[in-house]
Length: 477
Image (cartoon, rainbow, N blue to C red; front, top):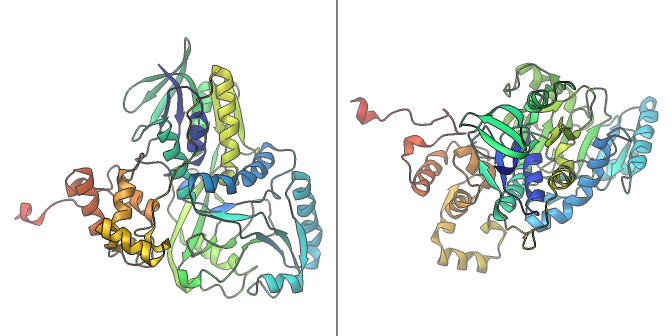
């Protein structure tokens, strides 16, 4: 019997796994997809929210502020991209100023540091492309941006380094209490654990309702559509620019990314299908219409891709973290600001599990991890020396993002490592650029097949049945 099974390998599940790796226990992370970071975590705003928006007194507010404060040190410890660019919430009329003041007061009550309201002239100096209608803004210097893929892979790799096991392509179909723990039925057979952590994203309510039917939970998938713009548009804004939030959330934002792109979105549309991550014409039209309210002249013609993600919205609008049943720990309804809160979520959920099982601290836990080496960041002399030692770092595979073969090989051989085109893309950015993998896919497929020791026909875009090659011409003849 395993000590702990964590269901879900998104940022929350991986944060919990990494924190639990500090203890002496056997830990297994399950996910129905082929890799970590395949659900809500892979499609969001990539924002570390300062914490002024969540209602004061909620768990969401507390963990947002705590997680935001933990993020800079965590980024150094685990070597992932993070930039504290600050955020602005733009007020477009004097009539809305009381709402801006209320947001400021809420942030102060939540413990957000450095908050202040900036007036029109200072705002224009900070953000030249702000709307001409802007009269003031809430300035949050602790707001930041992060790579959600990089954060999640860093947490997962450090967890694995400290003994956590990962099992993919494993859908959980049922959980039920047994003597001394829980039975977890999966698509690959039954498992048993002393304790289960439910970090299943939009599906967390289904598992919760199996474990605690007397206290039902309902998660509504909330779709958000986005535009991602080319590097040429990356400096259109210097900070994350929000509109004053409304009942459906923080509105359409415009933000730089840590990789030099510009991100615009999202919508906030409640749907029924928990797998419906396709964009819609109506959703993208809404982003176009609303994005220009707070920021003018957004160069949407520089869009290189659009995408949609699902948030796990619960009508009570708070995080649910705690024991729903003895030995069954919920980490549910983790919608925005879930990414910002992840370090604090990991600590809280892991603490509950460790206390329940009376776990002892592991004396040799290693909290550090080194990210994939990017030769572009090295001085020319060091880069040349690297290429002399390992010529793979001199072979450019993705021209748009200047990703080398050496980086892709590194991504494949990490634990957990890339097994698909998307796995390589999210770890190295090969395929993330202007051509959206139009040129580099065949070479990445060849490298994956060679390094994994499998036929080229086995390589997929995103696991499962998403194969790229369906046959060979010579066989057909």
